[in-house]
Length: 185
Image (cartoon, rainbow, N blue to C red; front, top):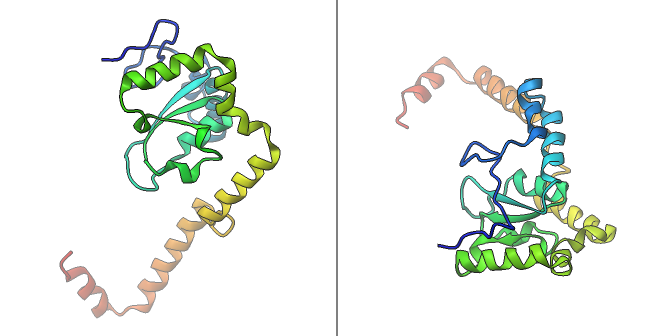
């Protein structure tokens, strides 16, 4: 199996294979989980590293979570293990190192070692961040692709769902409700 060289240690700050305590992430316990503060703290912690490993909970079409965007916001180069169609969510194809694009783990490790020792090669992967026009074009594309401008916040969505359920409950008769509950699922 491929192993990372000692010059490129893998620090696991999460629960899985935990081997490193990241002092910046201690805020979680101290502040009871304030979401905004946790987000800012996570970005500060990730910003201390050149690379970060992003592993999605599932490898499925169009399943790309906030983890990838947190890596972008922090400034590190994501090593991405997830959806094969992640390219449609990227500002440029070089913006991530896609684990599944490498024929072997050894090939990925070789490339990581090369990037860690070659600032010019590493810079080519993060150069997109230096183009305000490019970042704006990517962001605009994300807004259109996700319908973000038309999509209400989570609280608004939950309120709309509750309102629809309430209206449906009031507009159905007792007999209709009994039939719905009796129908096989």
